[in-house]
Image 1 (tube, rainbow, N blue to C red):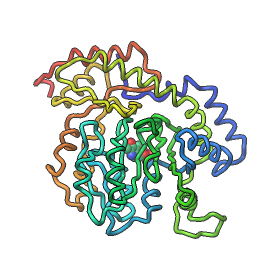
Image 2 (cartoon, rainbow, N blue to C red; image 1 turned 135 degrees about the vertical axis):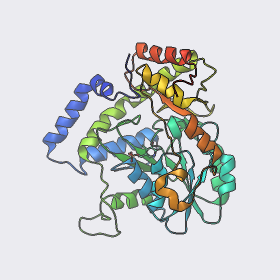
Image 3 (spheres, helix red, strand yellow; image 1 turned 90 degrees about the horizontal axis):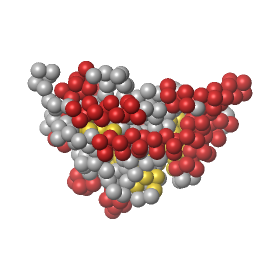
Image 4 (cartoon, rainbow, N blue to C red; image 1 turned 135 degrees about the horizontal axis):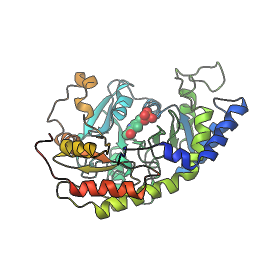
Length: 370
Ligand SMILES: *Cc1c(COP(=O)(O)O)cnc(C)c1O
């Protein structure tokens, strides 16, 4: 059996008529950027998260970098970032001229509150939390530290749409919550898209100006902005996706529950669940000391997997100038060497889930394979 990490077409096929109707509505409307669909999606997404405002932008990276810019951070400022995150989180900081200060993860793959406390300096101007793989970070402990130091928190929710911590939705703990709607995310567009949610009217206003060349009134450019608008087509399609998001998350949780109940293999470690957090399983990430061999074994049996992520940002080629070296963040580096994301997508059949589970259970490390 052949199974990919994610098969996006099944989600589309399941709600095909709704998506096609939304697309046609936009095509026929004669209005393609900053119109009614975008405004409606912003209202609906804000309501979904519980935030007062949502501002649509072009991508998750733009949501992040414009949020950092809204805090007016730049040269000389430090922003704390998890050491095991996707490169985009760090890029949002460096693009603004500020310095990412990496912090080791906890056993749930999220920013460790313990290591966080030790990394704060007088130059720390923000803490950028990532809710990796769909599970919220320990927001109680992180907020306590942030508040004690008077440092604002930003959230990278690119993988955590709908994920809770202590009954509160991710994106609602910091001053701004940044979302990506890249097609593979739990709420995915049919192209690039993103959004920032906030309760601050002032920040929402700044973000709205910034995404549209820095102007509130056409051709009156108050600040040097960028072009990062969420277009009407993506907004209309996202409105359809948002209606099905809760059911999509439940389906992912059912697949994860099956994986948890049936994968039993001493060579594989299943992801740990934080009691206070609701996991939405953007990825189902197992760990193995024999990861590369395990991935090769799955591939030989038709199952495609991915490593999120093989190179931690401090070791990325683009950040050589920051001076990071192997051994700086042993926990993040160990995770990079051990993690593997199993197939997890909406529309995955019971047969496919069973096939993956059987393969996992049959796995034995094999020196000949490596
Ligand atoms: C996907 C992702 C981003 C970037 O989102 P884009 O829409 O691709 O720009 C940022 N952070 C994390 C953790 C992500 O998974």
